Amino acid sequence: MLSYTWKPIKPLSLQDRRIDLGAMQSIYETWRASKQRLQQSSAASLKEFTNRLVRRLSIETGILERLYDIDRGTTEALVSQGFMEDLISRSSTDIEPSHLIDILRDQEAAIQIVMDCVSGNRPLSKGIVHELHAILTKHEDTTTAIDEHGRRHEIPLIKGRFKELPNNPRRPDGSVHEYCPPVHVETEMENLLRWFSTYDNDDPVIVASWLHHRFTQIHPYQDGNGRVARALTTLALLRADLLPLVIDRDLRVEYIKALESADAEELTPFASLLARLERGAIMQALSIDADKEIAYQQSLTSAVIDSLVQKFGRRREAKREELRTVNQVAIALRAHTRKTLEQALNRLTGPLSQVALPQISITEGGPDYANAYWYKFEVVQSAKEGGKFANFAEDHYFVKASLRVARERLVFVTSFHHIGRELSGIMEATSFARLESYEDSDDREYAAQDFFLCSLESFVFTYKTKGDDIVQAFTQWLDAALAVAIKEYGDRL
Image (tube, rainbow, N blue to C red):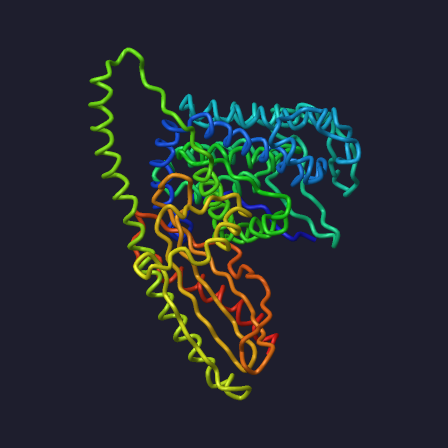
């Protein structure tokens, strides 16, 4: 029986183009401007960050395919130091370390081809795709094929050439996922590449998700299709001046489920996953340490240098003021948060009154209230755990809601803070909460647990974001975070 019947791929549809990725467009624009500044002030740091991102991508893409496994500690060492066999102990992986290094270097080399292709402005062609496949499978000699009777057997892996036999996987329940028959692969790949070449003006993350999914629908090679698809995703993003994204091993189930949704002509879950990962990569890139000095050409005289410093200083200050207009978006979201929390907590008054009369208070924070330093530790720690840098040299805003019933109190905080070691024009919102239990009737003592995050993903906005465009998405995000806090609180009552 078939779980999925192959059908010819489709171009990017109007429905696909209407996928709502939140404020990604403003994030793209803000990143591109920030990248230019980083290339001037911190070129070496930006290059090293990108190299580490490529190494992490190279490791995780093989783990997703279950070519090998590597423990987390060794993974971090390889990402930091590079692909060296001395960093790998025999107990840290399930294949021979020397063979593992060969595969990792192949996968890193494939991404380098992608980067060279983008920098050289070469259009994506069958030749480039074949080249990627040949490099990615360089150290694999055989693969498994299934004959017309459903029997599995080993066959030589053809590298850099389209498949000659069906490669439809059979699942444990006996169902079969049918990919493009070999006879149609050439035509399908020609359609894929022709359509892709016309999508320069579409959202790059949506295009990348479309390209990845349609390629996997075709499954043009006997093996190695997933790795090639993720390399092509990187190409689509780099072509739009964005960053490579890493689909981590922990996301494997979500990744496969999102691709299955795309099989059913619903690309939104997959595009949303890639948008989330791209947003995270950008936020981490903005958090790298900036180089301390900028080199000037020695041939310039001191007078010219002084003149340029003043000129560029004025331009820089004007740009900084433009980037700080993101604070106005934060202030508007702060007001919206207060109103939303008031309505939500007031709705709880009736049900909670059966336990005791609720006490509700809501406090706003920020430089306009002289309390912008509140919750700095919690914000900095949560950002650090996500590989980001929360910039408290810039304005910080928050809303604190307190709900007390009898001796149990919930403190719920939504913070709006800048991301990046330098002013980037990008801010994020995070929500966290704390539960407090008062121990005596005088309320002078209480036991409180540490703050815990209520928002698995932050809500990102930029100085180019228009508040009206994100209100609905932000409200949904805030409702989800508050629901986490209230559930934890309800379990305590």
